[in-house]
Image (cartoon, rainbow, N blue to C red):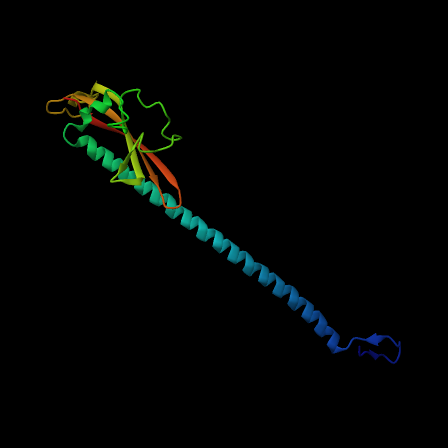
Length: 186
């Protein structure tokens, strides 16, 4: 180490090379801080990427469930499907996806969905539905001008159905949608 001494006191005077060591130390600390910021940013971006992917799988599952709901509602409106015998007596062999009033004992949110209790839309098991009749031949409320509604032409009674649909994405994300649907009963 090179030092200089003063004439009067004899104490060493720091040379410019020693100030370089301080600068090196400060530079290393700043480099460490910048490196930690970079690592943190990389970890956060990876987490954000996974979150965005999860949202895409949730949207996919929701869209599959929506499609199954639309298929079930379309089936109900075709011909006399709303009067199917499966809505009077539960038959697992013929119509496992149709349930009469009080016939659905399992909770659709927690049950295991399969061919024995639901219908796969177009053979695609990622889109399934079941239909439960929850009301029969009910009088429509508010169907006159006096109560604010509008009257139907002939039929003033309806059957009420609950459609429960399940969508499952490629990564196993599951969404379940329930909706009610009304069909004129006469």
